[in-house]
Image 1: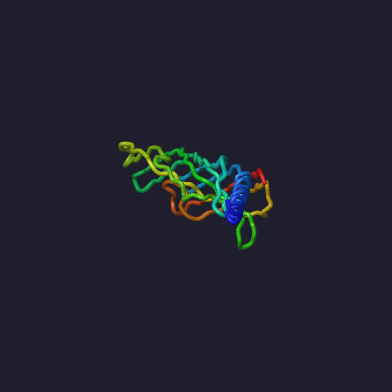
Image 2 (image 1 turned 90 degrees about the vertical axis):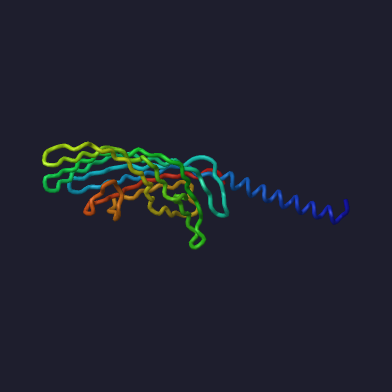
Length: 205
């Protein structure tokens, strides 16, 4: 092997070693943790409550400055509605029971150097995640009951932004009034509140 070839081989070996070292360092960094949000919806003749949880654990993968970790989302809850119009009433009861796989991202934001933790998947949705029964009564006569079969939807966590050197991240959002549709059969005048908590831990370099 000539001197030039030896030099090229040496440079390539050094480059591969550096890449391998960087990859090993990236792989050594790992995030895990959990989060939850409770949603409460109340209105005239209406109530709904559900709790959504995320468990974040598993191997960390990287893409540029982003670190991704798999998550497991679950959604449980229940609700009921009683509405009357003239001589007709409609009673509906339902339960929420859904689960799906997602992922979280951990990235130091280039604009201000802050660490941002957030969901990294499109909104999760589960068919048949909301099931129940509805009963209509007309003039005191009960009609044939019907089934409730709807999708359950993942809610969004509030922004989690901390210093980039943080190795333990915990926080909460107190019950906050939200706007929009969050629950099955939600009346337009209903009041929606959401509260959340989270805790994440970084291990490795």
